[in-house]
Length: 329
Image (tube, rainbow, N blue to C red; front, side, top):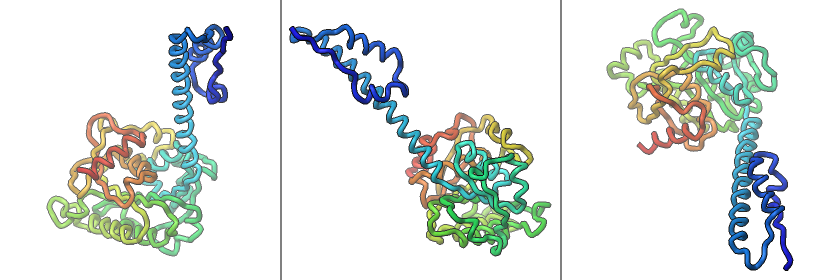
């Protein structure tokens, strides 16, 4: 009686070196070298068929994983994210996250030398730095925006008079005039603008928010939000609770990458300006980075708080679930 020797699946033969375990290879080879099939060996046929299915499933899983990685690399290489406010508490963490993910970034800084102090010497293809000030429309040369696909704006100042108000760095100039100038200068080809704002902006005439708004910070943030919403550009607005963790404005990149939100890593995401509480700068920065590519976040406004517990970290799927849950609640 003639015997037949099963052959390895084509996909397996082509790609087994990428991740199928050696144990499975040897297991399959055992059947290849030692099993003869005949009309009376139905049980052996079933065992062999099951074995081949297991191998094929693992190959498909491996290929699927590799495809996802390829897509992620393509997304990263095709993006150029403009970060405005990159030397601030949230902005530094945004830049650190983008660098860690190999996403090309461009900064607008009033003092470009600060970039080297904060992020070290970086490849100019990976991190580009332009001198500019969003408070001054004439500073926003069109060349700054060439090739930009996404924007994260996390500029800000203190709610009450302080040394940070020096050189006309007031809420009106930063949160309203600066945002308006930036949005007006952006090309229509930008795929997403993520703006960091604050909880309470819709209630700045009500206690206790009216106290925080004594010098107009919430009013001007809301004006900046409204200008972005009416611009026609795809947007996501992240309204943060009272910021904690940091600011890490005197730390280098390696320290930034090691920063954690302590015990408050869990994230609450809401809509309708109903959340009240604190938000880790680390969490807010990651929310901005994650919102860039999620379709569910387009043209949406979210409030973000931090609470004790395990959080989503930088896992896109978990962030998507949080944003989706906020919209359905």
